[in-house]
Image (cartoon, rainbow, N blue to C red):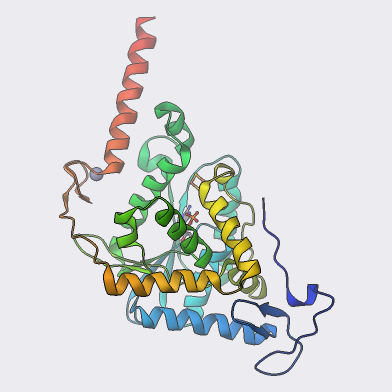
Length: 321
Ligand code: AMP
Ligand code: FES
Ligand code: ZN
């Protein structure tokens, strides 16, 4: 279900003034305990993005940044803001061929590229995998979301080869929900690695999440104020996902105690930096595609192999009949 976002103006009893210029405030950020007018909110958003990029040494103005865009508010907002801030950016979109949702996402991405005059590369899953994600899920009887994650990760890493950095639009709500899940299930390996920057190495480009400290509500308001036409609907297969449940739970806590999400995530990053060191897992090259992997064959190639063997089995079955 699409979430609805409230502006300060939609609370009839609230008549707030912008903390910066004193004019009528339209965006109330309860977690920061400030209200801002439209223009000052946009500046506030971009300043914090810039601060995050610099504080975590994500990239500089000389680096070429590939922004993975889904067509949603976070990733399109990120690409727009980074371009506005003068970074060398290009976009990358994976066409997933999921019901009508992927067509509608692609339309938004293409319209955005034309409007903003920014290069966005589009790659289809079918060309890379040999079939669509939905077909792969039916053939292998595996949940779509886990296959989709494997394929997206692989294609994004591969596309980023020609760039210095890969940026994604994960926001504070995404990251806090992931942290909650990792803590509840005590996923030590994931906890060691979860952060706004995943360092480059062994053939992988650095991966960064510049909106890690920006709430989903703020990215929605920013995209709206900057005139970005993004896709509001969520992927049909995301309904009922555990991450959405964790987000709802955290949202309810935040409603009662504004600022909790940012303290939860920020506190963890500090703790992680001081006490947790990710284990160095030696990587080698996938014997099939030459991509860095922990095993002999990477997960993407394993997936392709399983799909091929399934196809051969069913062909043999049909020809016997
Ligand atoms: P999600 O996992 O759908 O919450 O997406 C997290 C981030 O992954 C987005 O903000 C994008 O940066 C990236 N992403 C998701 N889907 C796509 C896609 N189809 N093509 C390119 N990037 C994507
Ligand atoms: Fe991957 Fe929905 S976006 S399954
Ligand atoms: Zn491989």
